[in-house]
Amino acid sequence: MERTILVSTPWPLYSRPSIQLGALKAYLEAPFPELKVHALHIYLQVAESIGYELYRAISERTWLAESVYAVLLFPERAKEIEKVFYREARGKPNLRKVDFKTLTSQVRDVSNCLINGVDWEGCTLAGFSICLCQLTSSLYFIRRIKKKFPNLAIVVGGSMFVGDSTRNLFKVFPEIDFVVNGEGELPLSRLVRHLKDHQSHNEIPPIPGVVTRNAARDSASVSFCQMETLTSLPHPDYDDYFRVLKTFAPEKTFFPTVPAEISRGCWWRVPSGAGKHSGCAFCNLNLQWDGYRSKGVSQVVSEVDHLTTRYKTLSVAFMDNLLPVKESEEIFARLGKLNKDFRFFAEMRGSTPRHVLEAMQVAGMHEVQIGIEALSTRLLKKLNKGTSTIQNLEIMKHCEELGIANVSNLILNFPGSDHQDVEETLRNLEFALPFRPLRFVHFWLGLGSPVCRTPEAFGLTAVFNHPNYAAIFPPDIFRSMRFMIQAYRGDLGYQRKLWQPVKKKVTAWKKVYAELHKGPSHTPILSFRDGRDFLIIRQKRPNAESLTHRLVGTSRAIYLYCQRHRSMKSVLAHFPGVAEDRITPFLRMMVDKKLMFEENGKYLSLAVPVRQMNR
Ligand code: SF4
Image (cartoon, rainbow, N blue to C red; front, top):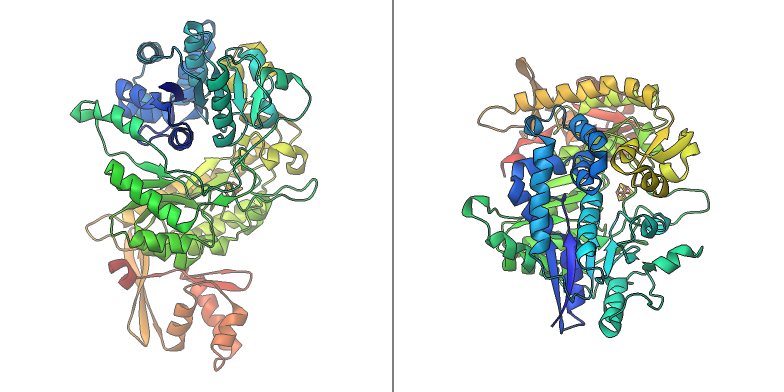
């Protein structure tokens, strides 16, 4: 039986098998029954060896992750690399006592042991899936393996290497033979077919999506090849991950989350006219895909059913960057009918309608990451997010009501954001306080993002590799490559100062939210109970008695009508018997009391019904 090895090195989340490996393994084995594909989840074994807590702490920070294997790759740069590690580890309780030298020698020992434990001889190829945080670890494994097995064809792919950034890779890492540019299924299966039939990998015919050393020398643009639809994708195969997990001691085993995918790409990122950018300004996800494709409803339902049955786990993370608009409701309605107590995670846009969220909740949506990013509509425009603050607050409220944990971000320091954006954010944060706090994240410049492609449009005067790469890599490599994380000259100093008050307010928000949710009954901060022709709103406050407000008759009806955001025009049309000069002061009073939010003549009630929470 012929063998191909697919590898994923540290530092992805250890508690999930790799969807890249799982999807490719299943896809490659289908047309080649005589081929055995081994998916090596090296990161799982490294995590088990150094301890899950330590692994998690390192994997959460790119520079911590990249510095560990960097020192094994370039021991002559140990001093500089060690500095990066300790600087990034500062303030992290789990890393306080970590000695970098001890850690790296432990990682080296387990890595070498893993390399020695695999029979690489006679494999068709070894393919490395390289995403964020996996650059130095993959290069370390590639170097060691190629040294021992110089005839083994080494292929790399993944979100780290896309487009022209792949060209110099062959020069600086001659151990690499091929790069798959973009989606892996078609190019890799054609490469496997060729290598199986021809043994030698020195001369291969052009394969769309596969970059060879020779092709990289040509000035022609790097080719790309993806499947037209996702309908022919078999269910991902995670057997190898679970097989390894089974070998661990009982105290080291756990119930993993299985990754699934409904779609690839981003429908918000559509091709646009020359010079214009599409998609969110900061985003460099999806560079490996062209357009947006999603699986059919039945295909998704059967995949989730299959994975959870086969691996006896109920936690599923959808790896999509965003879910399909049309199909989502039906997908989750059908998943709900499987009668399994799922625990789902998914990422979605702030414009996801309430009825879709409801279907998700019924199916078992436990946690979501929503593209909130800002609570200033002015800033959301600069981010090209296509949403507004009122939409963001609305979906945050729905999550609160439906009991879905919303773990979304607020981007600080975005280039070109100004004092008005910050003022607007501070004002709007007052209205967000009843909902689960957002996490602030500092803007970072991703290679290939619209900001990176048109820096001048965002006030940047220069864009270059992040200086941490200069500490990690020798100068010739640093100069030859364009890395995923970029740095820039612009207004960063100004931005840091500008966003300080927002940082403080978000920190205080977290504290108050936790404080107000203490105690046995997890009641919402702002809630109402309906008495049919009146309603009572309860507004919890820190270090003070709760406030209560009673709304009667039409006031109640208007408050309920604005459970979704409504324009003034629509409120007036819905209540034709009530004059505008009666409605306006009522709405204004509600906004003053922070019971409703107003933006550009649109109104949103903020309290969540207690009855829904108790259901
Ligand atoms: S952040 Fe999400 S919605 Fe925005 S471009 Fe990226 S993937 Fe698309």
